[in-house]
Image (cartoon, rainbow, N blue to C red; front, top):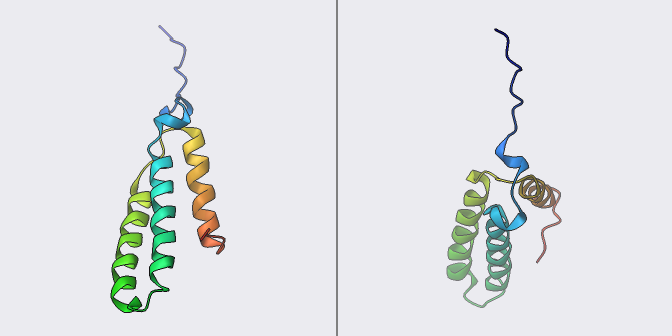
Length: 91
């Protein structure tokens, strides 16, 4: 008995933007990046910048490790990472 092969539909196709935690991670990283830039202009920048860099690195790691669960989330993540790679980070 031959059956019709099932078509594989990855989970990433379904869902809405609000369903994907990647958007919150992008916003969090961008906010932490902006805060790091502001801290670097302070007089005691050495102490403040070290903590700010650690915070930004933690947020970036979380973003990299997270898997997008929707197609719009995947596109947003790849676009955001490309902006960073090309030096187009907001801030």
